[in-house]
Image 1: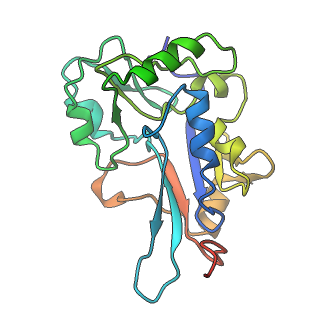
Image 2 (image 1 turned 135 degrees about the horizontal axis):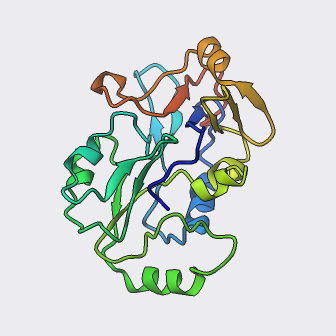
Length: 226
């Protein structure tokens, strides 16, 4: 049941901005796993530069699965909701496509399925593939979709495709209750990592309480100088 969280879990993600090189492997892995075709992307990688004299860096941005999500409060049919394991999910069967949640999200994390023929055909062709994520159904025309946090994978102890596919190990995923996150190669204590690297959340002053943390791009290597 998409509405039930995985018992005892509280999923959290950490992105190390010093490691992101805009390889887009996280995006490609996510799209393949969820049967998504361009231009729809549940992860967006943006080039950032905080001040004029500072080096630029890349910022991967996805749904933040907020603990105080404004999107769930505006849905008139309870199609989007907060799970006990920290994930914010969408019940595509209930969604009426009003886009209120899209307007409420300050992070622009959601997309709308306008029914592009190539997307619908692609989903129908691959919907039963065993290596796909079946926790959400982005191919229902006229509904909203977004990063679902890959609960099917996490229930099996498998890291999401965005984590596994990143060649630089920039994305960490884990369980706040266990105080541990991993990128598949390295394992860190969550609280120690955030404390030592001055972890922060985007637009934290909005009070949304995102479940995605960023590590500042200290000693960054990317983008490489021209």
